[in-house]
Image (cartoon, rainbow, N blue to C red; front, side):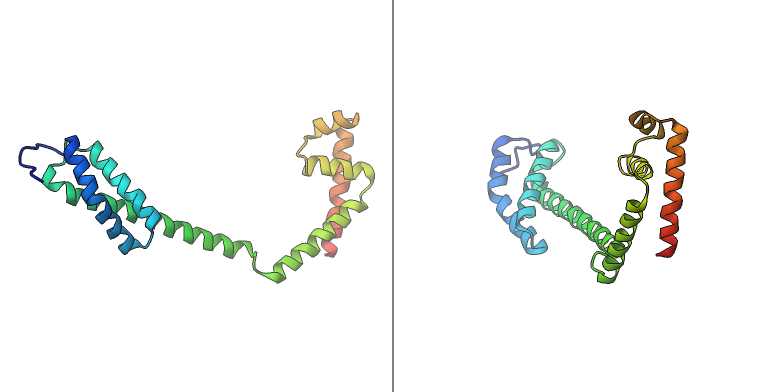
Length: 171
Protein backbone atom coordinates (compact mmCIF):
# COMPACT_ATOMS: atom_id res chain seq x y z
CA UNK A 1 0.00 0.00 0.00
CA UNK A 2 1.32 3.44 -0.92
CA UNK A 3 1.41 5.62 2.19
CA UNK A 4 3.57 8.42 0.80
CA UNK A 5 0.62 10.83 0.36
CA UNK A 6 -0.76 10.28 3.87
CA UNK A 7 0.25 12.54 6.76
CA UNK A 8 -1.34 10.36 9.44
CA UNK A 9 -3.30 7.11 9.92
CA UNK A 10 -6.76 8.73 9.93
CA UNK A 11 -7.63 7.91 6.33
CA UNK A 12 -10.57 5.47 6.33
CA UNK A 13 -9.38 3.38 3.40
CA UNK A 14 -5.87 3.11 4.90
CA UNK A 15 -7.29 2.14 8.29
CA UNK A 16 -9.63 -0.51 6.82
CA UNK A 17 -6.86 -1.95 4.69
CA UNK A 18 -4.57 -2.05 7.70
CA UNK A 19 -7.22 -3.85 9.73
CA UNK A 20 -7.87 -6.46 7.03
CA UNK A 21 -4.20 -7.25 6.58
CA UNK A 22 -2.84 -6.91 10.13
CA UNK A 23 -5.65 -7.97 12.48
CA UNK A 24 -5.26 -11.71 11.79
CA UNK A 25 -1.46 -11.64 12.08
CA UNK A 26 -1.48 -9.61 15.31
CA UNK A 27 -4.13 -11.96 16.71
CA UNK A 28 -2.03 -15.02 15.80
CA UNK A 29 1.08 -13.39 17.29
CA UNK A 30 -0.75 -12.82 20.59
CA UNK A 31 -2.22 -16.34 20.62
CA UNK A 32 1.21 -17.84 20.00
CA UNK A 33 2.82 -15.74 22.71
CA UNK A 34 0.10 -15.79 25.40
CA UNK A 35 -1.99 -18.88 24.56
CA UNK A 36 -5.35 -17.10 24.96
CA UNK A 37 -7.36 -16.78 21.73
CA UNK A 38 -10.30 -14.90 23.22
CA UNK A 39 -8.17 -12.26 24.87
CA UNK A 40 -5.97 -12.02 21.81
CA UNK A 41 -8.97 -11.12 19.66
CA UNK A 42 -10.05 -8.54 22.25
CA UNK A 43 -6.59 -7.01 22.37
CA UNK A 44 -6.48 -6.69 18.58
CA UNK A 45 -9.76 -4.78 18.69
CA UNK A 46 -8.42 -2.59 21.51
CA UNK A 47 -5.20 -1.91 19.62
CA UNK A 48 -7.06 -0.78 16.50
CA UNK A 49 -9.36 1.34 18.62
CA UNK A 50 -6.34 2.97 20.25
CA UNK A 51 -4.81 3.58 16.82
CA UNK A 52 -8.03 5.23 15.65
CA UNK A 53 -8.13 7.46 18.73
CA UNK A 54 -4.51 8.47 18.15
CA UNK A 55 -4.48 8.36 14.35
CA UNK A 56 -3.40 12.00 14.01
CA UNK A 57 -0.23 11.27 15.99
CA UNK A 58 0.73 8.01 14.22
CA UNK A 59 2.41 8.18 10.86
CA UNK A 60 1.17 5.54 8.39
CA UNK A 61 4.58 3.89 8.07
CA UNK A 62 4.66 3.46 11.88
CA UNK A 63 1.10 2.13 12.23
CA UNK A 64 2.06 -1.55 12.05
CA UNK A 65 4.69 -1.28 14.82
CA UNK A 66 2.31 0.88 16.85
CA UNK A 67 -0.46 -1.74 16.65
CA UNK A 68 1.83 -4.59 17.67
CA UNK A 69 3.22 -2.58 20.57
CA UNK A 70 -0.21 -1.49 21.83
CA UNK A 71 -1.67 -5.01 21.53
CA UNK A 72 1.26 -6.59 23.33
CA UNK A 73 1.28 -3.96 26.10
CA UNK A 74 -2.44 -4.48 26.70
CA UNK A 75 -1.98 -8.23 26.84
CA UNK A 76 0.90 -7.81 29.31
CA UNK A 77 -1.33 -5.67 31.53
CA UNK A 78 -3.94 -8.45 31.57
CA UNK A 79 -1.30 -11.06 32.37
CA UNK A 80 -0.05 -8.90 35.26
CA UNK A 81 -3.61 -8.47 36.56
CA UNK A 82 -4.10 -12.23 36.41
CA UNK A 83 -0.90 -12.79 38.40
CA UNK A 84 -2.09 -10.39 41.11
CA UNK A 85 -5.50 -12.08 41.21
CA UNK A 86 -3.86 -15.49 41.54
CA UNK A 87 -1.71 -14.31 44.43
CA UNK A 88 -4.79 -12.96 46.22
CA UNK A 89 -6.79 -16.12 45.55
CA UNK A 90 -3.95 -18.28 46.90
CA UNK A 91 -3.63 -16.06 49.99
CA UNK A 92 -7.37 -16.18 50.66
CA UNK A 93 -7.58 -19.93 50.19
CA UNK A 94 -4.64 -20.43 52.57
CA UNK A 95 -6.13 -18.17 55.24
CA UNK A 96 -9.68 -19.52 55.10
CA UNK A 97 -8.70 -23.15 55.80
CA UNK A 98 -11.48 -24.35 53.50
CA UNK A 99 -9.57 -27.46 52.56
CA UNK A 100 -8.59 -28.34 56.11
CA UNK A 101 -10.99 -31.05 57.38
CA UNK A 102 -9.73 -30.67 60.95
CA UNK A 103 -10.63 -26.98 60.93
CA UNK A 104 -14.06 -27.70 59.45
CA UNK A 105 -14.78 -30.32 62.08
CA UNK A 106 -13.67 -28.07 64.95
CA UNK A 107 -15.71 -25.19 63.57
CA UNK A 108 -18.80 -27.39 63.26
CA UNK A 109 -18.40 -28.61 66.84
CA UNK A 110 -17.93 -25.05 68.10
CA UNK A 111 -20.99 -23.89 66.16
CA UNK A 112 -23.09 -26.68 67.69
CA UNK A 113 -21.93 -25.77 71.18
CA UNK A 114 -22.79 -22.11 70.63
CA UNK A 115 -26.23 -23.11 69.32
CA UNK A 116 -26.76 -25.24 72.43
CA UNK A 117 -25.69 -22.33 74.65
CA UNK A 118 -28.18 -20.04 72.90
CA UNK A 119 -30.91 -22.66 73.31
CA UNK A 120 -30.17 -22.82 77.07
CA UNK A 121 -30.93 -19.10 77.45
CA UNK A 122 -34.27 -18.04 78.83
CA UNK A 123 -36.86 -16.99 76.25
CA UNK A 124 -36.31 -13.27 76.96
CA UNK A 125 -32.52 -13.55 76.85
CA UNK A 126 -32.53 -15.61 73.65
CA UNK A 127 -34.93 -13.20 71.99
CA UNK A 128 -32.85 -10.13 72.89
CA UNK A 129 -29.58 -11.85 71.96
CA UNK A 130 -30.81 -12.97 68.53
CA UNK A 131 -32.47 -9.66 67.74
CA UNK A 132 -29.30 -7.78 68.59
CA UNK A 133 -26.59 -10.09 67.27
CA UNK A 134 -28.31 -11.70 64.30
CA UNK A 135 -30.84 -9.13 63.14
CA UNK A 136 -28.60 -6.20 64.17
CA UNK A 137 -31.36 -4.37 66.06
CA UNK A 138 -30.40 -1.68 68.55
CA UNK A 139 -31.41 -1.88 72.20
CA UNK A 140 -33.94 0.92 71.59
CA UNK A 141 -35.50 -0.95 68.67
CA UNK A 142 -35.68 -4.17 70.71
CA UNK A 143 -37.24 -2.33 73.66
CA UNK A 144 -39.94 -0.95 71.37
CA UNK A 145 -40.56 -4.32 69.73
CA UNK A 146 -40.87 -6.16 73.05
CA UNK A 147 -42.62 -3.29 74.84
CA UNK A 148 -40.05 -3.24 77.65
CA UNK A 149 -37.55 -0.64 78.86
CA UNK A 150 -34.08 -0.28 77.40
CA UNK A 151 -32.70 -1.20 80.83
CA UNK A 152 -34.60 -4.50 80.67
CA UNK A 153 -33.07 -5.21 77.26
CA UNK A 154 -29.59 -4.38 78.59
CA UNK A 155 -30.09 -6.69 81.57
CA UNK A 156 -31.32 -9.59 79.39
CA UNK A 157 -28.41 -9.14 77.00
CA UNK A 158 -25.90 -9.04 79.85
CA UNK A 159 -27.25 -12.28 81.33
CA UNK A 160 -27.28 -13.92 77.90
CA UNK A 161 -23.64 -13.00 77.27
CA UNK A 162 -22.59 -14.21 80.73
CA UNK A 163 -24.22 -17.62 80.10
CA UNK A 164 -22.72 -17.93 76.62
CA UNK A 165 -19.25 -17.05 77.95
CA UNK A 166 -19.60 -19.71 80.65
CA UNK A 167 -20.39 -22.31 78.02
CA UNK A 168 -17.55 -20.98 75.85
CA UNK A 169 -15.04 -21.41 78.71
CA UNK A 170 -16.07 -25.06 78.97
CA UNK A 171 -15.49 -25.64 75.27
